[in-house]
Image 1 (spheres, one colour):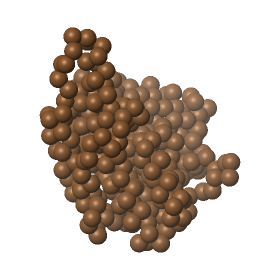
Image 2 (cartoon, helix red, strand yellow):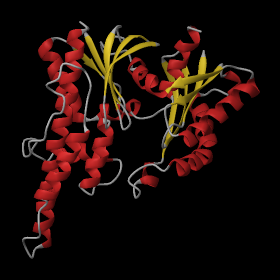
Image 3 (cartoon, helix red, strand yellow):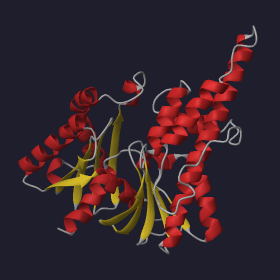
Image 4 (spheres, one colour):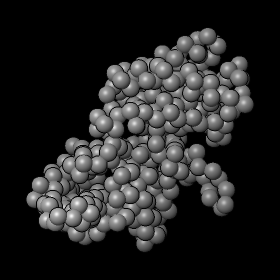
Length: 334
């Protein structure tokens, strides 16, 4: 079964063709990140107009790369929710129109469930086994931080979530405090490589609580006060020296902040995994691409005997392959 997936929930215009829910025949993503870099975030109306411009060429490219024609497509899957309403409507309208014209099913997909499913799209080779169920998934992105019991490809139970800011949102806001470009997550990850994660002692909110919820608002505020207090002043006539001092300070703030976020995510996720007696933890969403999070989650998993898996970086970001792949299993269970 060949399914064409369409994803327009935020600022990526994406299309993909997936065969039988596993085999990615094509995956095309046109990002609008550069468009919104100067704004520090996505403007829904602008994003929707860009989707209108990009969607048809992206679909055509996805079909071409899959070596299939529209006549070979058995269903069209699309992101229904959550997301930016104007952006979502572009993909929804186009998917329904295509399905109606071809007299094939149009399958609505939840964007968050698709991110969780992205782990099932990992290549099964080099001794890597298929995803086992049940397992715990940490879904962590710009809009959501959720820990989920994944019972099968289409059945989930939320065990904990953020009570305020999402982890990815905190990354973007801290990046703005440090006058770094949008999106902030990848920049902070890269900057942290040159920083000292122990330079500043930022709080780990809710880490001492028995529940599985997260909180990042207080951490973000603590970083804001530290930035105001410790930002280097011009101490030399040498611009190069001042620049180096500023870069070192930003690296230390970034590394210390990132370490706090990662500690919270790893500790809570593994606590859930132990309580539910699972042998596997997966990660999903844009923040799952963070190198420090991957490193510390694997290290903790090795210490307590829990396997840790995560998608390739391009599958952590918004894409249409996860939409089309999940649609196959949802269609089977109709």
